[in-house]
Length: 114
Image (cartoon, rainbow, N blue to C red):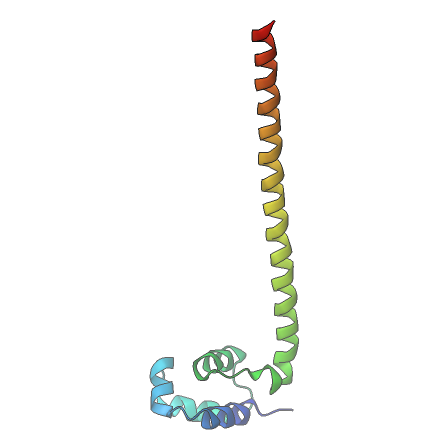
């Protein structure tokens, strides 16, 4: 089993960001970050939050994150396809409405000319 705290510590140290600055951005104490480094089961949420701050992608380092990364990519694709279908339905709706109004307009013109 991976020791997430050690992986976290290694990435933080390699980032070069001072711990004081990191803890201020996290609104946590230095003691909290040291406890996180010692914790083999640091919360994924904390790992991701720290990753954003130090600009580090932990999905290559932590096996548990690989499946979340895959799932997030899938959910993003699913969300995009839903938006595209909503847009397409919106376009079709307005196109059909325009065609119907144009047909009514043409009928009124034909009645006026007769």
